Length: 342
Image 1 (cartoon, rainbow, N blue to C red):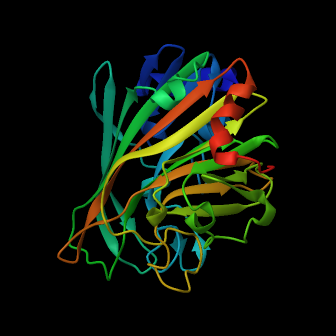
Image 2: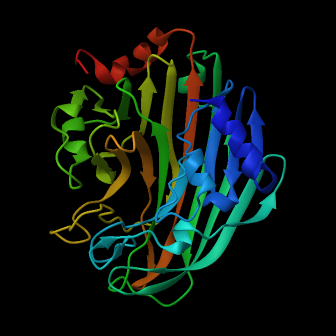
């Protein structure tokens, strides 16, 4: 969680970005970096931030880190990340900047009109937009009396401008928030009936990386073995997040609102049971050792009117909190964890 990287980010793109501060924290929206959001809290960068990628922004995938808007689905016949059988990030996502539409002292909105092509060959004309503002730290975190905390909200919107049916395409907002992994980073979800809440229709089953508690589950995200799980929308999870005890850091992500009732399989796989074989509104990704990061993700559904695809909208809040004593974090997760060992 180096502050030097965050300062270098501001030095490189600060004049074209939007920053808001809250106490010991600040959030920065970067229109030229895919409208990603990066945060600093108490002098530390909390997101994964790849400065080298910012210096070479024409790679096949410019994975800068931070909080990123991503059109779902990734795979399957409607996937936006394939040319035939080759994984591919389209220029609309990888290279094209957003334009700063509106900004005040408290919020900013960026947008762009672009084109997307899915694996089926359907061309979508899309307006992509993102709004950012600082939010109130939820009471369940503020009551823990952290030494530093902040919360920010992003609203992501995908508006389909041309005439496309659900037989030709699906689309939904998917926000992927990246963090540096370690052998001490544990992701979790607050959800009832946790053994039935997880969708494993992504990669190889994570096996003993998953453990279950009374009111949720835990996923060891050490950035050493590629894996991903979804949290079923029907499970009605309250939130997901992660904790890092050595750094005394706690993060939670909540869905505050969404427009779009048609949920579908977002996964990067063949989807043998079809595009509607899974319906998740949260997801957690663990990278392999070459990348060394993990993601905490929120997902919306598609807006459909009379079989026409109209777009998607998703409002998500991320909260960070730092503590003097890791025991406070352990106390917070005890209601989920109970007597399990992770």
